[in-house]
Image 1 (cartoon, rainbow, N blue to C red):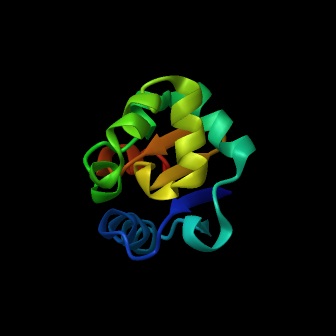
Image 2 (image 1 turned 60 degrees about the vertical axis):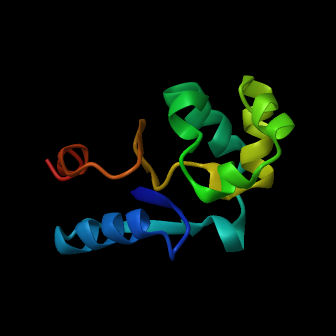
Length: 115
């Protein structure tokens, strides 16, 4: 079973969900806003893709953060803490498919889910 993590009103999450629906891919959606970020899953994502890939430094949430908080997030432990407290700084969506973890939306990567 594929699990998609994100925020429902995020355009990239909408695009990913639409793509999965159009290609008949069953998935479960986990809403960061309502359900939070599962610490064990975050640890898994960090181990698989790393904080550099997972931390969204382009978004408005990141830009609104104090410079001290941003600098603390450059260390792995600080990034993890920030992602738990501010799920909006996680690049979305995060997709778990078996042992694979995909971050963001890429049609080619998503196409590999249906092969």
